[in-house]
Amino acid sequence: MATVSDAAVARADGRIADNIVYFARALRKAGMRVGPAAVKDAIEAVLAAGIGNRDDFYWTLHAVLVTRREDHAVFDEAFRLFWKSRELIEKLLAMFSPVALDQREKEKPRAAESRVSAAMFEGHQKNQRPQEIPEVEVDARFTVSGKEVLRGKDFAQMTAAELAEARAAIAALRLPFDTVKTRRHRPDPHGRRPDPRAMMRSSLRTGGALILPKFRSPREVHPPLVVLADISGSMSQYTRIFLHFLHALAEKRRRVHTFVFGTRLTNLTRQMRHRDPDEALADCSTAVKDWSGGTRIGDTLAEFNRKWSRRVLSQGAVVLLITDGLERDEVTGLSEEMERLHKSCRRLIWLNPLLRFDGFEARARGVRAMLPHVDEFRPVHNLEALADLCAALGVAGGSGTDPRRWLGGRGSA
Image (cartoon, rainbow, N blue to C red; front, side, top):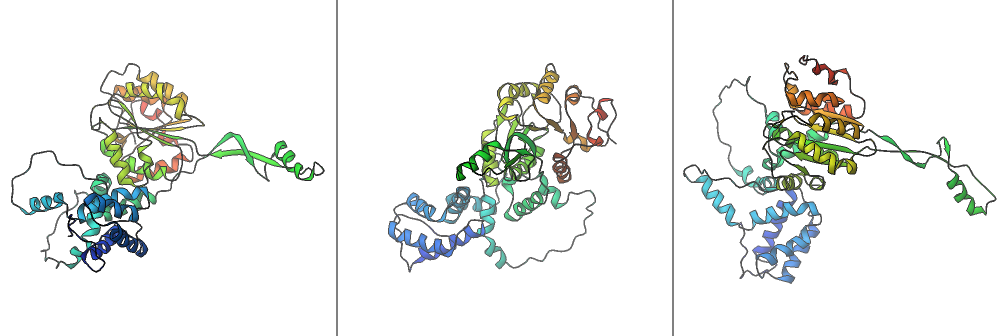
């Protein structure tokens, strides 16, 4: 580890140049775009600016090595770990010291911390001699596989390898390519409708002597996708996984609006626009104040219908409602708010993790009040359910997702 002090001297033939090279190599392994030219510019910038204090050295390297906004979190965490942070020393001493269990609240992992740590200590782990571990036969019939653990693990605590595996699983899903026709038109040589304005505009080039036929067709766009996700205690693990799926979906289509609700409604559309998933989910955790709390479905739907429905529900919007339907308060007014939401959108899909049970029945008052006003009733508990959802967004749902199946009191087959 290198140390930044006030008395350090930046010389090209000293240790500081080697440390900057190794620091840039760690940034490259963590996912940043740092080339040899950037490393050379960083050394020359340090030689020109000098090292007055830790902040000056930080911003000198930051100005040269960070070229994208989403790389700020990775650079900040790498600088904190590489340039001899006192927090890292205390964590290492606490890890190898036989001390009693600490009952204090643990500090939340920072964005990109796991990726940077894995990139920096990769060479040290390769040089260690493999330990001989005796073979032990374990009956794993009732255990959870590594992929199942990965699906339910918090993304901020994943290593670089686990994050890459999760991205590969999400990227392998076939994202929907559903479009709707709008009232606006676009130039189309094979269109059926003539375009008088385009014909007159093109005739000006010849002074009106030649008028060529021009045609147009309706413009097709992706409909807005609005997500209302429950973040109560019984739904938080499913919502965290679905937020990562929405982050991948928002990178490939424009109008994706994300709302979460527990005891209050929170708009996370701006936080989900970050290109780095660690930074996006870290901002979401900071913005939400009622994560893993109670549930007030009726009140939050009333707030959404009053403040946001006319802003985001336009041009045939599709609404994804993610909740178990277990209302904590009275269900008075819940049916009316669901009916208003259903009439404001083109399609309302309810994603309920309770459908993973074979004997599910719509007996809860909240579930029976909401079911008559949804178009489809689907499970959302694993990657297979997300794949089915992606395939269903482009086409109409089948009979297996008809909510009327559960209104008669029968369980799912």
